Image (cartoon, rainbow, N blue to C red; front, side):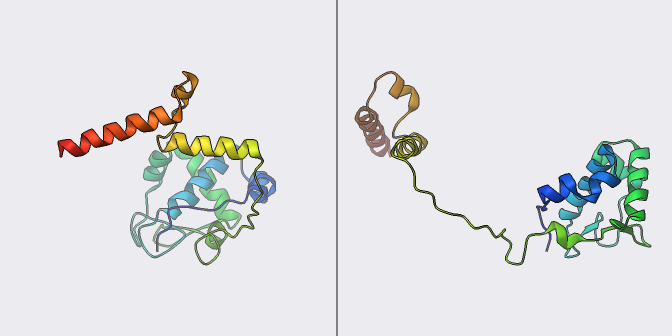
Length: 166
């Protein structure tokens, strides 16, 4: 199944071998290759191809990534030499460690979220923000001194008017 997202570990991206092995422009090409593999239309995951077994040409990739052809060629050479990618016989590019760029089974990142109680001030701000989101309290109205009840009355009158028109 085709994935529309990729995972990049911040510490590995900042401190890992990609940073020391590739120049900044080459790193951007590598992550573009990983992202393009994430858009694969077929069940083959980790492949950079137009459709199964049909590769992009070097020119098509350079155009798609909006980069010079020489930059793409040097990046492909380095990434292949370092084992980050494989260029198969048919010209399709395979991301070698594709599973590293995917979430664990189940499709969701596993995080330990801890519910932290809100302070009274934060709770009041949260309630006001939710009210503004749903039209109960417009921030600009509050600045002009219009109360929540006035807005609610106007909204109810407007809703009644709409119902009568139907």
